Length: 163
Image 1 (cartoon, rainbow, N blue to C red):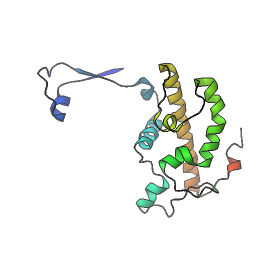
Image 2 (cartoon, rainbow, N blue to C red):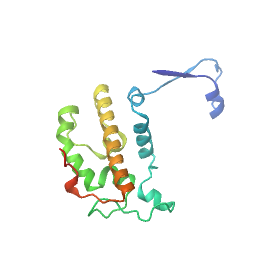
Image 3 (cartoon, rainbow, N blue to C red):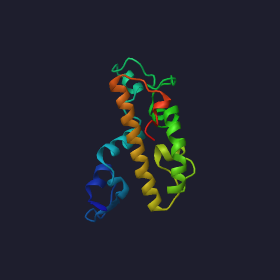
Image 4 (tube, rainbow, N blue to C red):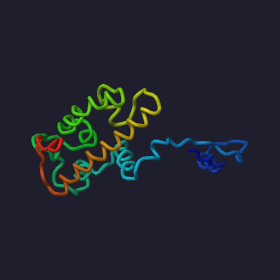
């Protein structure tokens, strides 16, 4: 899908061009358009590190503690911790690695793949991996919100009760 923009973009940002009547073409990535709005929001806010994690809320005096709600974790809950370094997320990644190897050809989910979707694959595989990671981040965020709103702590054995 393409979107065309006229000369207002050049005038707005101070770019001078003698042919302002010709449209400028910007490509919007198709896999980004296929995400649901809440998935887009989570991806955008995680990339810009403005998800309302406990550290984010503590800075604004909206939360009493910035500690991760998982039992035995004890680390500050930042975006990086929420999607990468928490032992709960490590357990999820370890269980998903064989699935990712089979489906996408990715042996391990690295930090670059998880946080930014960076990996050199063909376009179809990248699109599928990006959609998969968007769903994974949405689930991790929803589980965290359930714990936060119910003011509960989860144990590691509760991670995969139904699997």
